[in-house]
Image (cartoon, rainbow, N blue to C red; front, side, top):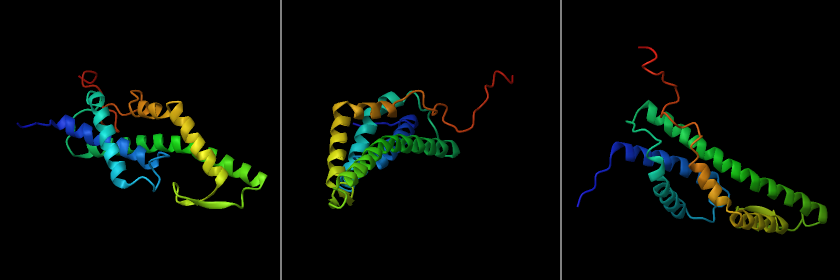
Length: 170
């Protein structure tokens, strides 16, 4: 039994994998040191395989060249922006917890946070865990996956340079 993979499928796989991997690089839960690299990679491949049937139609088949590297750069940028946007919310909550902790006197009671690999107060850890549970309870992870599938993102066409329509220049 042999399987054939088309150039469109392989290029779409790598482009989606770049976007998902870049998002996992900055996403709040996956960017920590507590999650092993093999788990991150395996989950990124799994999410890529889940998203691939939907993305195959929107991403054009490309040969390795300038267009492919430009599209890969754009996909990485989209993934990094999505991961940073989600991470920014959690960083704001952690900063608010630090301010509250200092004001009520918990600022001096710092412990090593095993999730982030840094020192933080117990109140920061409590706020961080509570925010993560609220995020998961409100299906925020579904919104992140929907953000990975957003059709309005500027990734159609496969090139950073707009190509003019050949019929208009006939």
